[in-house]
Amino acid sequence: MKRVTVYCASSNKVDDKYFDDARVLAKEIANNNYTLVYGGGAHGLMGCIADTALECGGKVVGIMPEFMTKVEWNHPSISELVLVDDMHQRKALLAKDVDAIVALPGGCGTLEELSEVITLKRLGKITCPIVIVNLDGFYDNLIALLNLMISENFLREEHRKIWSVVDNSAEVIKAIENAYEWSAEAIEYAAV
Image (cartoon, rainbow, N blue to C red):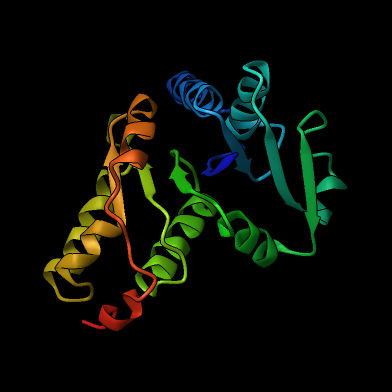
């Protein structure tokens, strides 16, 4: 079974539109026979996407540092919970052996995870599609910054193919299927 990692927020206070879109993504993942891999949380978009995938009969794997279970942040009903020592191990496992990575709107943790996998893909350490869900323009400023990095020669024009951007989660599976095939030899043109 193919695996899709989803980065998303743990806040319960975000607008309902983000929860609605997370439910769409969870259904798309489950209905297309992907395993959902995510941060293991029970709250916010994390809990929503896990609950919805499970309701659709999907498999859900959470990866969480053990210290977070002490405050009961972990989801009690997912298919598998992998406990790790720290956030670095969590990020490494979230990106390991997955067929795609999707970033829903989120906070600084989501941004950090997304930045790291863009860097890893630039270096050829991962090659899977990276899809940014730009719901209602949430990531407009980040996309503008990435474009500025290209125009100012901090990234190459070819690096624009590292990620794809969709307007909502209903477009994610198509973006994964149509993603540019990235080379594990990308380090050869990582430098600008």
